[in-house]
Image 1 (cartoon, rainbow, N blue to C red):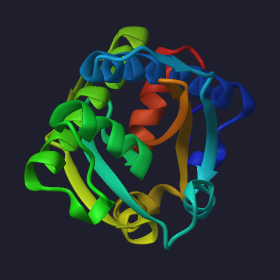
Image 2 (cartoon, rainbow, N blue to C red):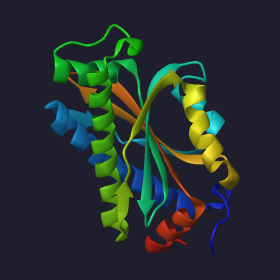
Image 3 (cartoon, one colour):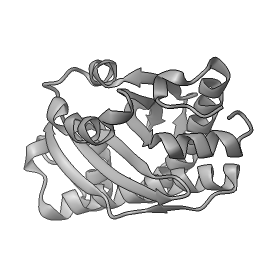
Length: 206
């Protein structure tokens, strides 16, 4: 039976989506490790189906300043992926590529922002490739768009575009250990309802 909105997901479907989140997250972290040239230990990601407001609070509240990288996906699955990078992860990436880190998130140069955007692009590609292989689907990734702003403003874009399908999303909280330092990254997966139905069908839990 097809679903009409995220709220219609049953417990089995949510468990399957959580496992998809775990597998995709592992692939994305491997891509990050290759790019920064450092071993990254990752704890089992926390994967939840949350509404937008709860997701915002889980990251730090609507006024928290953060870098958001939005990547649209299409093909057998349409929708979007959003990575939310905080200062400590940004500093690690910039130190790796440029030798030093900006004093704050607003001091990023164009080249530094480009490096972050490419990082999001590669991680998203790794993530959707894992889903595509798992479900036997073809998924394409569009050019990412990066924004530095308060979280409430950043989240308004997917909230408006996906709002007619409900206010839920797949929230993936990664805790990584890099050079004995704990670094968190957050990722949001927002397939359209039709795409979600298709994915669940491919995974045998429609």
